Length: 262
Length: 344
Image (tube, rainbow over all chains, first blue to last red; front, side, top):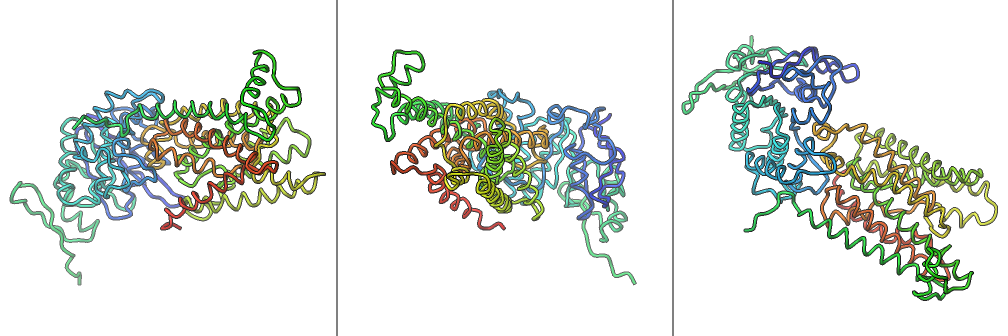
């Protein structure tokens, strides 16, 4: 087993320490959730793990290879990154946005069109965006854009998929659809790491969880053992109760404010 | 319903438009050299050109033959090459700064290039003309981007304001340099550089513009797919395997080179780089592999006819071609600006 192994990741902005010597390990073929309060450094850490921002120190190793040592295009065939809140001034269609995902697989002058078109079509289907194929990206809702960007990442055919708040802007049905899709991708062997705001979704859909607070990992491990009421009280300052979903039998978290101490 | 391509528009369409535009460009060159104050017929004009290419003898007396071969043809060819170069520059700058208002003129490159060019001409080092124009363009570009980033996040509107400041300054220094050193017709000289004019374009100008197109323009056009990746910003481009900073600076340098070379033969002609790529996008969409070559063709045709209008509409009086492009381009610029009202 190797999957994603990041060690001693440190990122500073000016004098401010954003990420302080973070280690994290994600087994291959699993869904991991990166959780933590606002400003904990989730997006910053994800950019480093996606190898789009070089950390000041530390290494990001996937399947035995240091991602920062790989040629860029080769790396982009292995790792895909879905950013939060993407926007463009360009009047691109959904099809051409998703087609960008084929870029690392194509020579710069020749497009392998038949194969690419099939992969793009599959990515759109997986994200339920097929009917939007000819729409202009800028005309879509936030949730629809989010799904197009996920489709673009899938068109890269990555082995490692990193997502920053992929359920933002989505209604509950679409949130569950995206997370179910991520579970399916992991079942096929993809390693998935998603920053999630919603602890309930993290508890239900992830195998592993990494809890980030002020740029350091305060807990990491199998989700059920890690997201405990004690930890959530410490990190978020809330009272958490573990319930069981009457339909699925899955663990569900319910939250309430801490009773006034004193 | 017929099965539809997942590539948006079918790839055949840009190719067809390209062929139509290429034919239109050749036809424009053929017709434009026969237009002008001296009464020379179509047959005579092309008989003259043919004779210089080694086919038969010129039907025109030496003086009138010179009008076609030494004045009109090089001017028409220079106009086409400059138009193509400016349109490519504009399209690339729009992609790489993610700024629909980017253009070598609005961002100060053209004024910087003019200043560089004027300085060496007046110092007597005319051979260095394109190099000095390139350096001027590069310095102006860096100043504009620095100024824009010092105002806060680099937004399109801030970049244009920064470009305005840089180009006003460069324009003022250009005028000062000419007033200080030039004898004779300073006003005409200043207008030529600041407004753009092809009145002085002879064969050396053709050579400079065409060489710049081949050396900088063609490599730029081959990076179309990479430019597409910039649509969602740097992080996104990087995650698609693009070396963002090397690509950005490489392309901006190539753009400055192209703009510098064009300005060194034409002065700073505005709006060609701004409006034509927008027009071409409406036709074929934003994919750069089609956008760049088609913008080049449209830019060539546009500037060729703008210059033909500038030299023949009010004959014998001649307008600087920059006036013609500004009259057409400024309202379109206002329109583009209006669409961005919401942003500061």
